[in-house]
Length: 227
Image (tube, rainbow, N blue to C red):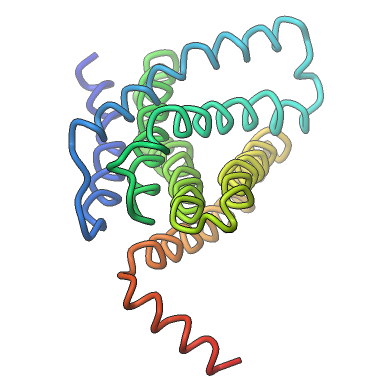
C-alpha cells in the first residue's frame, strides 16, 4: 500500500512543485493545501454521478461519455470550487495566482483518482498514468487558471474569461477522453501529439501569466509595432 501511495502521489508532487516554483511571488502554502484538499474531495461526488450514469446506461455513446459524463462534470466542479473558494480571496491578486490555485485543485483531484486507480488495477500502471491522466489534469488546471487570472486582472472581459476558464479545459478534456475511449488500438499515436500540444499551450500560458506588468506592457508594445 505504501508503494502504491508513493507511486500515485510522486508525479503530483513533481507537477505541483513545478507550478509553484514558477511563481514570481509565492502563494501561502496553507491556502494551496486547502485548494488541494477541496480538489481531492471532488472525486467522490463525481464518482457517484458517473456511476449513476453508467448504471442507467447513459454512457453508451462515446461522445456523451467522453465530453458529458467525464469532462463536463470534472471540469465544471473544478471551475465551481475555484469560483466558490478562491476567486474572491484577497490572496488571488496576480495573473499567475490563478494557475497556482487551479493547478492545486486539479492536482488534488488527480491524486485521489490516481491512487484509487492504482489500488484497483495495480502499481504497474503508475508510470503510464503519470505521463497521461495525471499530467493532463495538471495541464487542464494550468489552462483553467490562466483564464481565471485573466478574468481577475481584466474586469472588462471578466465574463468572457470566466467562460473560457471552463469551456477550453472542458473541450480539451473531452478530446483527450474521446481519443482514449474511441481509438482503443492506436490511441497512443494520437494522444502523444495531443499531449505535446497541451504542454506547449500550458507552458506558453504560464510564461505569459508570469510576466511582470512592465514586461506585459513591453510585450504589447512590441506586438503593436510588429502589426
